[in-house]
Amino acid sequence: MEFKGIIFDLDMTLVDTSSLLTMRDQRLWNQVYQNISKTKIYDGVINLLDQLNDRVKTGIVTSSPRTYAERVIDYHGLNIPLLTAYHDTQKHKPHADPILDGISKLGLKPHEVISIGDEEKDIIASNNAGAKSVLVKWGNSGNNNYAANYHCKSVDELKNYYLKIILQLVTKWSFLLY
Image (cartoon, rainbow, N blue to C red; front, side, top):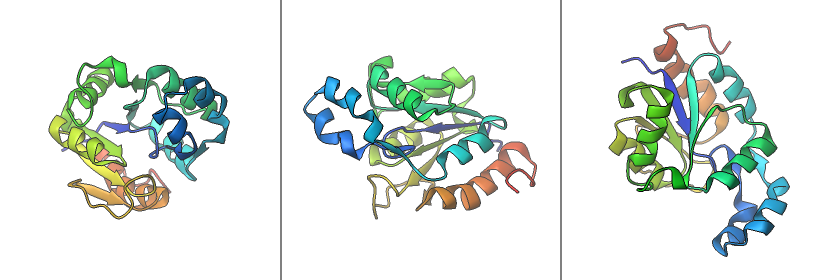
């Protein structure tokens, strides 16, 4: 099986947006936008994305509204060309539609894509879409062991262990990361 694309969740997967949670829950969007500077990209994410972008197709599939997601992506300078946001599909995670929309935008088939997220709904959506699922445990998931195909405790683990193996499958080259 050859992997050609990777889809990431945004909040608490690529970017620590926990500082915005209360404002988002209260739908105080002006305050949320004014405080995006308080969010933090996880250590190692930019390096990881730089290594991936020239080798596989990448995208973000988020349960967040597009305007918010675009502002977070722009603020942190994430070089990810594809975005599927909350209002882009009628059904939302844990339904497969958002992941399938992202896969379609990548021009790939579900079995060619790895989908990475921090919540159970990300993993269920990925599995239901037929993508390989990776649960990251540096965001919301903590010690949960949702039914993901792979589990990672840190960005370094994702990069140095799982993605090293996965990228070998993606490109069939063993020298990509080092």
